[in-house]
Length: 314
Image (tube, rainbow, N blue to C red; front, top):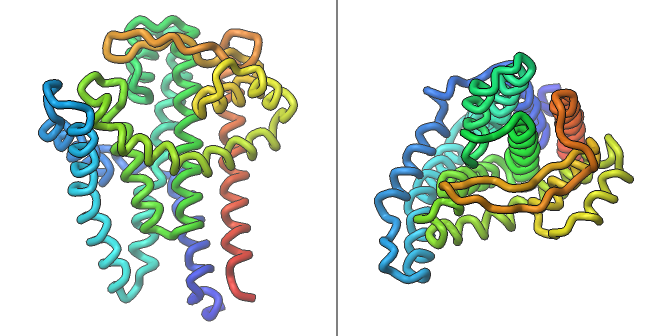
């Protein structure tokens, strides 16, 4: 048993199980969470170094790339050195993965939206859904609130939960750290913010590439454990073939609900097409979406555990 526990692959499996258990059973307070500080630093960096509109797109690209590099690279290097030099690196690896795998907060906010919608407290539901999405929520209808919450939970499951676990299994804790920090930076420098259109593009393009494998894996797993025919049919019918539209079509098809549609960012309306199923979102669909994503979480965790076990020496 001691020999097994001393093997790095088995240690990685134990770290994964610990992080998943903590994400399910405990909420790290946002006021003391390390990523809260990172969000603040990323926001402040963006505000201070984003060029004015008098500069061309190329200057914005350069500034955005350098800002992300200067902010994130020293932190990643210091943490990597700390883990490498530590006598018990498994302790720091566990701490890193617990901090990165913060999908429990998104589920908690979704439950609050669900409870507010169930009690018909529209204003409170709008306030709760604001914490989950970058879109403007002040004028959302009941259907709009439900759709925004479902879409946000679904996409963050794919990008955050699946993404962190995927890169932890493939590249280890430092690779997962790099991925999570880039994802955080992309979300804080939202490309729909007028000043960030060009500034955020280098990080956004990199994150777009990095999120593709875990999103594909999470989408396939969700199809397999739910209604693959409905999901594939909805994907095929989607008028747009970009990644976000196809992912929303997948879940919409599985649940037979309409997702997507118009959304307002920075006082500007964007008319995205509706994708997915044939019916409008109802309260019962919010519950079904939560259950589907929960089953997918279990499947992803099981698949990741199996991958680590297969990589361990016999």
